[in-house]
Image 1 (tube, each protein chain N blue to C red):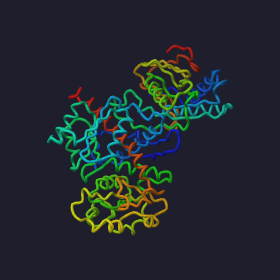
Image 2: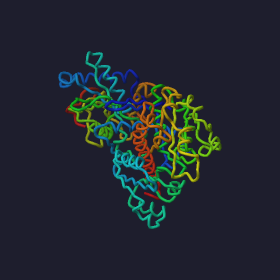
Image 3: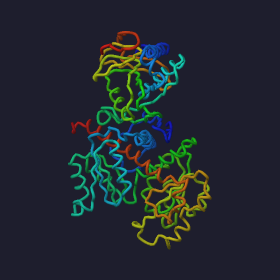
Image 4: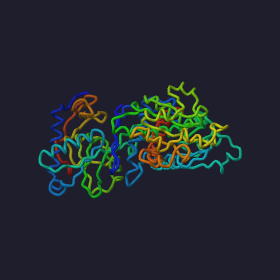
Length: 342
Length: 196
């Protein structure tokens, strides 16, 4: 597939691809595990084409005018929820935010009933974050509208992995390097990370070399079964990788003492200036946020020239615009052409 | 498919279009130093670039070239047909107060041009927008007419006029699908004042 090229800093942006030859038929985005290479490339190319919308004076396109997107977040989220909200608005959809703490869920309503009630209001897509792995998959079987997974337990966070890859592509493509040419280290709390799992599926599908790094308690050797390398020494890996994706230590998901102390974790697996000096000069440092500054990443690295952490946030908007466009578009076409739904 | 025009015929249409723009006294005398040609992706952008090259060889100043992706503005983008993968707009200049000529390969229903006009005004407020097409065929569904056309064709409503332009296509050609008599209404030029 032809790659895409972006020109930054101009009134508008270039996006060239041959993705229009492919098709997208999925009404839901539940994860990246089942996606083909072509489907992942369609998502990335569509995001690239939509990126320029945010550079215009009128930051909006009418494609999803009249469509309704509901944000249904059962876990705390700031950037993902607002990113989906803004993405839907940039596509001209209407957005409803459901706050679980003040909703009927707190009165004991089931997830399926909540979703069906939301759908009954004429919603076209539900963006769901849930503490239980598989919750979006379950919902997709019970409602007709599009289901977009915004993070389910420690299972998948597809749009985060897509924006990670979009950011890698943006950084390395001007050098003529595709995702398949990259060696990516995913560092830290792999065992509890949905971001890591989605990255593993998609990066390996696109041909990247992936190395997982962390203490044995958080980065078990069994992950090697996913077609990736598993190592337990960050210092050994750093000189050989193009991208370092630093995972957040998820204190809310750690059920036992996964490491002796915060200080020891930082000493062995924290990204700091000293470790950065061991990396290739153009290494790309990513973090899905929110950061535990001083734990998995130092402020000097997070705010330094190799960090693309804020680019990730910007790119997340384009990726989510693409996901909403493709899934709602596919669902609408299917619904219109299904005999039982004239 | 019936081949209506071979590469030489397509080249003639490009010349017709360029000559029509040259003969527009308003553009050639007042606006040619500020002109922007914006082509609807993909084949409209090729037509725009070739006409700009034609004018450049006749001493016109460099013309700004833009490529407009109208996918997100189409009236059938959601639900009416399988999802279209957008390819992005490429326009590295501001269009505010700039004379713009919009290019497409075929003008048929007028729906693409309607979408393009909506897309364009999201980028700014041009001084004016004129429409130039390689082939102007019958079958308008929206009130749109071309200011400049390489050729006007009368075709059966169910026929498709397919323009092939390299490098998007292997070679330049114009086809009629399915084959049927296609009669040129008039050959070339500016359609200012012509009904549609």
